[in-house]
Image (cartoon, rainbow over all chains, first blue to last red; front, top):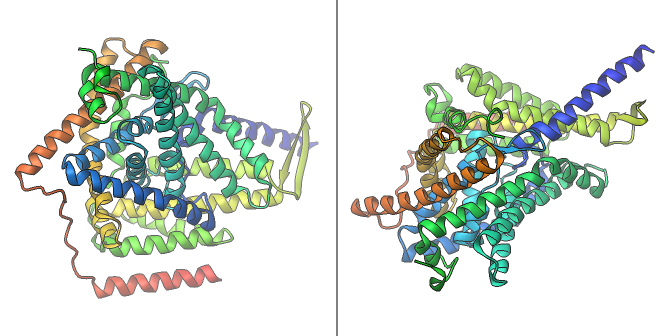
Length: 255
Length: 266
């Protein structure tokens, strides 16, 4: 009887902790995979996958910065913006708490996915070294989820919708939304494959994905609204920049 | 959303600033060690922590790192900020593995029609991952606490990390604080004008804030380039020059790695 009562207490405590983790605090660390969570083989594999993308991004960076000396400072500043945005608390109504966006949609739209991978890598490394967000050992995995998946999802969505004549707000919103959701989808894949041990992959993957839904579903929408707001603000204040970065055509600028 | 929920950007800014090593008092044995040596040792230890099958080695590394952090007189608040998140993640992973993973049943109870099962092997797996998280985080935290950003960058360049990437890191690091100041000014102005009084206005204000940051980034990048060109910038930032390695530091680090390797093997 006593054991049963003890077990009930443990269960209630566990429920509270799981609820707390999934619905209250998970958002605080949901963006990046924590240091040490992936075993050596998986960490090394994600690094190996990420390196060619980062190398291509650096090649593009070198190419652009040779012709425009202000390009490197601009990319560095964009990395600072991504760093700050991903440290900003954003309210998540369903969870009744705060979370933070990835902020990767906008550099992907403005500078292209290859440069955006470099921007994400820089922001992730600074966060790993000094804030314990993400980690050195999970840097490769986080580059893939936020840098590669997030950037490409955001960029392709934006370009695709613009080709279909969608307006800037809609295209920006969907780009931010999919950049965010793609990041969390990939994070779930990486986490499930890394911590599953001998258990089958799919059940754990679904559990992790479902655990992310209460915060990431609304957060994706918030990130979409944020990205759309950014693109529209740029269009209103500095359309010349959007033209220069080939986000819009010169003919689309209304004086 | 707005009135009672989120910690403000002011708090974020203070938190971020406190977490950067430049804001600590740095005069201790580890801060004087060459950044390349510290980076090399950290990478070796991280690889050992990740590949270890068990609890003992990561916990040993955690203990050593904690002792060094105490010796370095890291402020308790900073220490707590750095470790609270990893500790929580480790706890959640242990709990999830215990309840949802494994074959060997430790207990099984039925509450409100739901069967809850704790697994012995799941618990062990969870503890292993948890210890790995804490061990690895403590190594990186120690590196961050004991090494200024510019020295880490110089160390990375010695490890043949592409120079273009290091330059991006240096620009980003330089402007994080500038942009945080800008963000704080905008945020306070929005807040004073009830910009976060409801969800709709909050969303709109946040979008404007983020967009303004992008505009500020463009402005700063143009101004920085102009200023740097006037000072002879040719597209490359010079790095800190490396001093020659100190034999005692290299010997001590090899000895330490060797000793840890022995413990790892056992």
